[in-house]
Amino acid sequence: MKNINFKGKKVLIRVDFNVPFNGQMEVTDATRIVAALPTINYVLEQGGRVILMSHLGRPLKKLMDDGSINVEKFSLKNVVPTLSEKLNRSVAFSENTVGEDAENLANNLSDGDVLLLENTRFHKGEKTGDVDFAKQLARLGDIYVNDAFGTAHRAHASTAIVANFFSDENKAPGFLIEKEMLNANKVLNNPAHPMTAIVGGAKVSDKILLLDKLIDSSDNIIIGGGMAYTFFKAMGGEIGNSLCEDDRLETAKALLVKAKAENTNIYLPYDSVIADEFNANARVKIQDSDKIPTGWMGLDIGPKAIETFSEVIKNSKTILWNGPMGVFEMDAFAKGTKSIAHAVADATQNGAFSLIGGGDSVAAIKKVGLADKVSFISTGGGAMLEYLEGKELPGIKAVV
Image 1 (cartoon, rainbow, N blue to C red):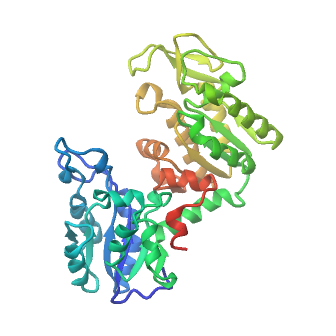
Image 2 (image 1 turned 45 degrees about the vertical axis):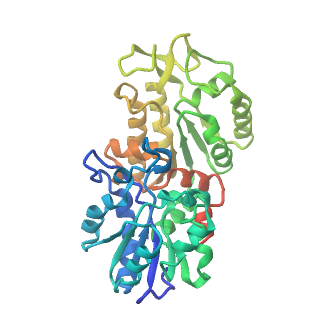
Image 3 (image 1 turned 90 degrees about the vertical axis):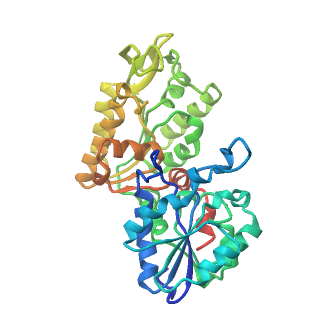
């Protein structure tokens, strides 16, 4: 970006304003908007004219009864008040994403002006990577900047295809994407050791590629959440009614074998908080994770697991956390995830580098109020996961 002269230019910036709203359609979490401010403000300071585009939700999946889109619920005009406040300037809004009206608004901008386009996903061509739709978007700007890391793993019209209509010297990644890449690379490339990866969530199948990659670079891998029970069953343990992917038992065994060969320590939860039903008011007790009786299920890591995991984290120099340790949305099963959050924050305060990547992990660290006590929180769950797996992200490839 810093190699581009933005003075007097129309700068089309893909941002990620896919933010949550309350019943009054007011933004309830402006994290993604704030994350885009450095790029937007830089272009404005350089005398550019900013045209912002983003998606919001999945409007075409949630059509109204008559087959039309619920414009009120999915319109980006609801972002304008918060965006104007954060930028400390008025923001114009185009009710059309592309077309004559949008082009007229873009062409009438003055240096320092900001225009926000309507939701890109009101158009079927967005998710299919339609070339004609991307070409219409490209007509709005002289320069293209992609700063939407959260959608960089999608080859959508506004994230990747649109870049084809700009020369190499007139397109670039924004500061947020640059920041995400720099921090991810601290984990991927020559991390400070000991390096500990904390991987949780429901399914082994969602994290196979990540685990396989992490075995190569990590000293320790802590596995929690529902996916842990697939590993316990693969080792011959009794897991009762706990979540298990029977078609991934051999995969789990293979990962354990590879970890042993690579001298990577795998830590599974010694004990679990188990319940007799998936319910916040269920009966609960503590049980060894490989001795869970029929009719009971593991919904959180137990006290011994918390102690062991926290000790490993405390002695680490690089920490990656992707996925919760249990059903942290229910208070009865949130202690494990909260304890890990505190351990990561404590290690960070003692000099470790910590990267929180993945929606649920981010939600957990925020819920505990420790977001400012870790090194970096990624804005893109799926994109960060795919990047850490070693995949090429189309939205980044298109602008570098």
